[in-house]
Image (tube, rainbow, N blue to C red; front, side, top):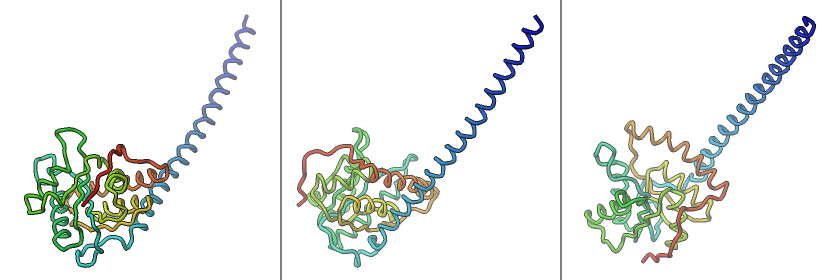
Length: 236
């Protein structure tokens, strides 16, 4: 009886040792795979951000006098108000820049592209109303209600509104990403750099932009398209 118990005990120890050895090997393999994936993610993010920056070089302008003429200025939408009810300065600066570009004769029409995902949130109409209140004629303004992302706005400007060359109006970091997306779709665009926001909100936006550029790089890599297309609209 003691011999049987001893044999079972020895066999059990053998199983435990074998199991422990397998788990150690599996843990090492998981660590290696995790490290490889982490390195790939970091490299993808760095390459994506470099590609966006590199492609946009020489295609953004801060002076209305220097930027080339385009028939249409594409304003990238954002909310009019912040969460605490204050005016969103990203919105305000884009409004000012759009008016400046229009009055300088560097664009003839304004295409506002933004999110209108539900009836209580309508970025394009907020821009249109503000532009009209500052003496821009309503017939010069066109709205894209399905600009849910920068990718959608850029592609739809061509696919729906028929523009293969246009001026993008937003902050520089945003323009660079939009230009990258447009260039990769064979479009000829420039960016008019709007005054930036330098508060804590601005810093958070720039952190988000790092990941947004990575996403833009992956979207182009995997051929991602807009959420919606629709009927074509002629500008002018």
